[in-house]
Length: 271
Image (cartoon, rainbow, N blue to C red; front, side, top):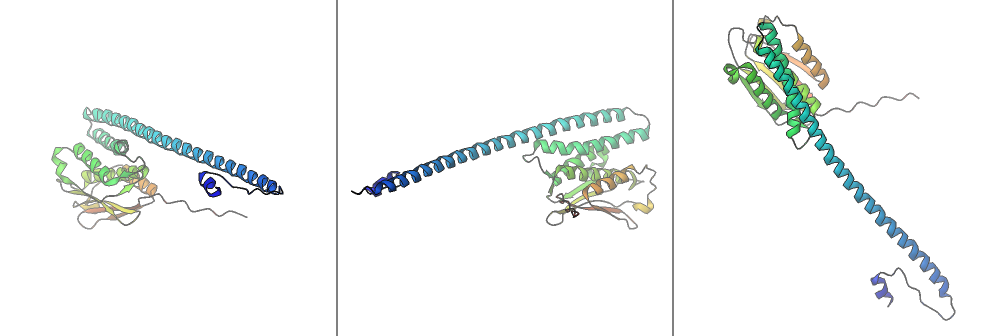
């Protein structure tokens, strides 16, 4: 009977005796049973609260991702509108220097807009596929350069992912280096401009822009130097070094960067 009762859900059992000593055992058994029931109910309540909290967290995570996509969509559309206005203004400008400045400004805006466009269409709003991003960016640069130069831009990219902020910096760097090569590498004609993205091991990559032009020594650049300052600023943001290789012919510029943001070193606490 005792075994059957325990299998049915009883907490304990007490054997009666004629002397009445079992009363003390009964009191103890009842106390243990009540405490056990309280613990069981507390456990069930805690588990229910954990399930509800997990459900709320998952719902908030989905809502956050939706909001981030919507923000990226709106930002991308706004940047696209700005780029279109700059393009319209440049198309109607007669001064060639002003026209080129507006083209460069348009390309810079589009370099940032492409990141937000990719985040809006991506399943992961926390990372950007840099190889796919550069492919879209190079397509924009080909269009801005005109049909005659479309075949001159060549992209060779490994699959690399990074966070949106670092992707923006990479895109701006590539944009500036490609525009600079278009302007100064081939003064008397046209030639290839090769953009590379190499996976350099866990958490590291190298982006490069290379041409077969006159090289830095042979270039008669009369620019403002704004592009170089932008490249340096973006490289500082990435924590990367700019390596310029310019033999007698051609120029190759490499930027080695970390694909993940490095944690800041803990500061010593004064005693």
